[in-house]
Image (cartoon, rainbow, N blue to C red; front, side, top):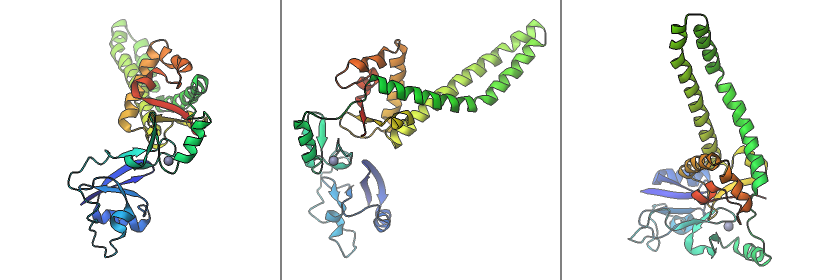
Length: 268
Ligand SMILES: [Zn+2]
């Protein structure tokens, strides 16, 4: 029997029944951890599903088991405030923001006072982009040192001999430039995807207390991070206008945020 469980706002699994038991022993899956397996109508607290079965038979209670099962993620939403995964039925919605029962009192209070998520504006995001560019610039310079040396070697051959041989070196130089460009692209893509999926923000954004979320406050998946990376290139291609529009948007969205349905918010 395959189980899924929610941890830190993410759905994890499938894991075998025995692996789930190990996770319980390790304290990773606790009584209040949400779990789901095929046959269950909705995600439930671990205690409600198996905690009662002290016999350890591993049988889910009959009440929890319902024949027609939705996909694992169908009934779980993320709280826009704390980011925890909770059953959709336990969320209160305010427009495209949904909050869990624990965050609801504080959130509705905050709304009454006119406060809501604080969006990161154009200048602070611009600063974050510069910090990331410096980090990436240093990293890619180090990685491309061997490439540069190879380039010098090729140019040396071209100079020291007759025109025909110099011309022959041209393809090698062009492919070195192309390789260098590809390394640059792969590095910045990996940087973006790694940090957005594991930390919710690139180091530049983290340093400034910013975070990228989905419209509903949920975390960024790898697929979305990749899509957002290429949408960002699009934003940059039109004279950076895609970035600049964030300054005029009610939710400070750039073009790539519009395309991907993402927001950049303050974490504190
Ligand atoms: Zn919450």
